Image (cartoon, rainbow, N blue to C red):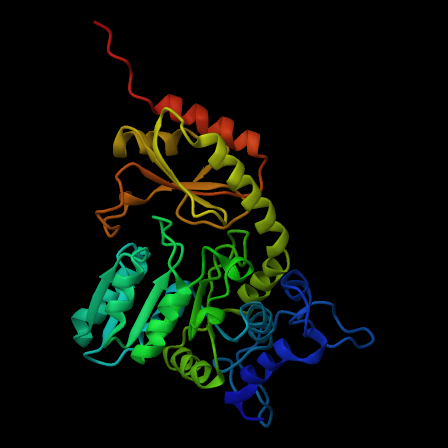
Length: 377
């Protein structure tokens, strides 16, 4: 076996007969385990080595690591494709955008993640690419924009507007146009949405978020429909050196094992919060796509009021991330790169595993504390 095919071979374990017909909850627990042999470890160990003895499949630490391979097998099985892991979500996004040729055209949501927007701006500036920004809820606009494109990049739900795209229709349009179709599935996770089944060629995750789920890992992943695309993506990782650490891979896989139960609890709590926050006098709007653990609320009073809310919570954590066991919130427009069409007072809420009553009470007291004083004549 050559070094190039070491990780590809590991992917095959995601599709072997032992795992055929299993539910996603079961796959999350079992795929990527060592062989069941006497005294074998239950979990794939952390392989801390940059160098291997010659003559074997690994060859060199930048080409492969058993800790990566185990994580890739599990996430690939959940998405239904061949996975390549990366040092971060941004590295994963970069590898996909690298497939766009010089002078090429990309279709992307106007409310894409700010890091993605930055990469697209760089692509336009350095490689003469054209970026067609679209509203992903306007399916006709997206499918029209796909004509002549090299890549259709979709987030669904979008970050932080929480807009949902018609992936099936967009997938058909991308295929008809001869464009690659990539979906950032970070918010939905493969338990709620499997874009490859809607015609996507590539699926991207910030594994930092719900996949690892404990706010202690930075990692990314790309899952490809076929091995040809998988090998192209792996080639970008190899050349750019954007490899994940073995410890990060171990932790991300450990987190993935509990994704089904974490997501089930967080989603149920998010739905309860939406019911209790809708109509709140201190909110102009509550946005929720109907699934998942992310909510966006628009605080009455704009940016200042929203910042006061973020600074006044005791249970909710004011932080720039999501998908952890702790509930987190952030005013997204505090970042200059955020789209101007996102309301100043929008707070993105990532619902964790705390009790719903505690989360509602904490947010309610923060909203009241941030309310502007009533003028007295």
